[in-house]
Length: 481
Image 1 (tube, one colour):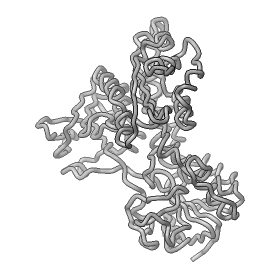
Image 2: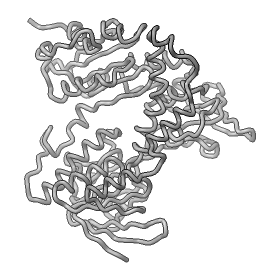
Image 3: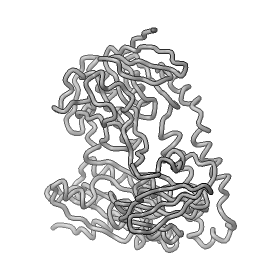
């Protein structure tokens, strides 16, 4: 068996693994990366990029129809074939040549195959021909294997050829009828996309629609989905699923109703990509989420790395924040920490330190590309109270802001902020409305920098823009003398 030695070995060449490898390479270390599928990972081919491309054409069409002069110039329905073709282009037609070229330019060695831990600082790679190679790491092994779709144990579901998020993102055609199990981000975005492209969509969501966001935001999305013909079965779940000989899928729900569809998408959560990773060889549990310390070293039940101080985990696999941008943020901190330890320089894991992923706990931004878009960062009012903070939450009608009224006739939206009353700083911000995604970073900066509310009064929003919502929320909150 061939052996190669590097300073760092990264298992998983998605955006998180790529960023880890890049940071340690910039830190002067040699690095190998192992990938069993496509370099670029879930985000590039089955999540962020293709799904947002799938949503964009119909979002632009909705924007045109909200302006009378533009609306008069547009006739006909969306071109589904052109939409899917653009989606395919953003997924690089499921080829990773461009990503591999970047790895080569960055000086990162790629090994294709299944990477498994075989002992301390040792990764065994098995390629598609069954040939094996051993990679030894002088400094660290990083697990960046992400997560996969969770398939719930519903009788008949597995036998009914269900879609996962990957199937929806890469669909070659639009089914006439699509049932979606799950009301989270994936379910809500795909309901928006497929309804706009011609499917009759039915959603079945045991925990409600987008339960983790502010209620005003999920309510606006629910209203928009229903207006576009989506049937919502909330607070119930399938008791059984069956696909008959004609191809029709029937879902028998706990509330006694039945849903019929041509395909069924399961969007009920994620499972860690650790089942076939060899964790048992280093005293960890296969198939489990990996817990990490502030510098993203894997820790055991006692909260310490123990004998595995060389093992790190970044991205979905550590369950801190299942978002690509947060995984890349972790990768930067982790990569710099590995390089610092290798070079004998101090590692700063204090809150907001260079080698700490503090934002995972306090300032995670997210955009949900539904109609309307939801852009949020930090706490909701409910999560802030659950965290023990003494808060005050205020909301404002986004459609009443002059910039929003100019942006689109009948603009409907709402925004809210959550203030920590003891420190007088923002800890949460949510907007729901057309085209609010690009407004989010101002809120992310305010929360991350802990800008005092009194100072925010001096951050004057330009008029007439939708950003005037900041002034209106501050007025709703009130100013102390």
